[in-house]
Amino acid sequence: MIIHIRPTARAVQRAAEQVSCFGLTGGMSRQSCFQLRVVISEVLNNIVAHACCDNDGQLIQIQCYIDDHQITITSIDRGKPFYTPLSDGFPTPLTEGGRGWPIIMKWTDSFKYQSNATGNYLTLSKNIS
Image (cartoon, rainbow, N blue to C red; front, top):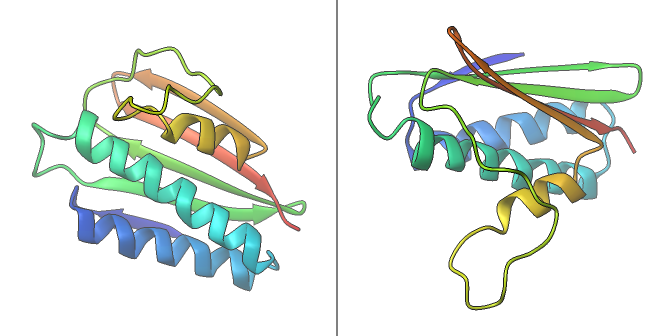
């Protein structure tokens, strides 16, 4: 499944729902689909807020496939690259942001980020359970 969305909050929520439903039809449990929906929402919201803020005309592409008891999702955008080191630790309670990456890391089985001249690529995998 391939989805193209505009960098808007409404489009992010629709895409997260579509990916979650795709996981459900592929045999994922409802709990895993909920986790997947949260993870995709977080990833896409980060793209909208941090990468595509100056590129309103650019679309974000989401590619999903299921193979060997695993769902793999790749988001592709042409916004600003991500350079912050990733951490699975939560920030202090009064810190405004920084909770997304720990959630993404906890609720996926693998992830890989790369950026090059054609765009930013974040690939996440989650085992089907």
